[in-house]
Image (cartoon, rainbow, N blue to C red; front, side, top):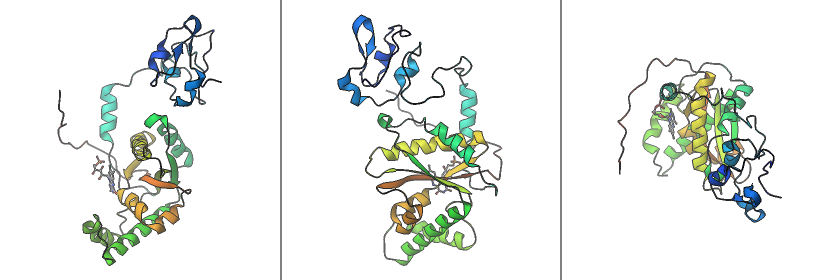
Length: 273
Ligand SMILES: Cc1cc2nc3c(=O)[nH]c(=O)nc-3n(C[C@H](O)[C@H](O)[C@H](O)COP(=O)(O)O)c2cc1C
């Protein structure tokens, strides 16, 4: 059985799928009918580009898809101007309303995020959504306790110079770890997968970018991620499946404040050759 199934009645034999296949696994067969030989089937990453670029929709979907063919309306380009404005408006949100984001909304965001690119279409990212705000507070508490233990020990750690101010802020009733966010999204993956870190960062970037379209704000939780790499108590609390580790984390929720402007940034550093 071959991985891709092409409907011979609708295929126009245009050869686009043959050109599109990233690994060159689709070949011209009898009467120019494209096919994937059985012996290369194992190399197919199921990226679906042959399906996406087939003008006739003649290639049967590998996965269930809501969009086997796109309507003219759905194919309409978003303008560079509106996309640029949307993306530039993204801010790290560190102040949140005391309001729960319903699971359905979070699932809708992750349903977009699962379309993010991944090396070899490996799709290694799993999600742990810490939905209970009390659990989020507990993660922040464990992280601060871990920071205290670093300060109390002779351990050298690159974070050490900034830990006293984080601990002091926490002791003064602030949450410098999860910023009082109601929820945290943790992208985790098999520890043995060397590609998973990059894929997880891409997925979380998509999460952060998608959030404002749902009225939400997010912020990378770097301190939480670092603690999750070292602190056994935090690992135990997260309880990821055996052999899996936190790749990165992001706090999110309904923002307390609106964005009224877009701050500047360094000019782009580009070298042309
Ligand atoms: C990998 C990474 C880790 C981060 N960790 C934290 C964090 O732990 N706490 C925090 O308040 N902001 C964190 N940030 C947010 C950055 O401080 C923020 O992106 C930067 O100041 C630029 O602001 P902007 O995101 O609003 O453009 C992190 C950002 C990245 C990309």
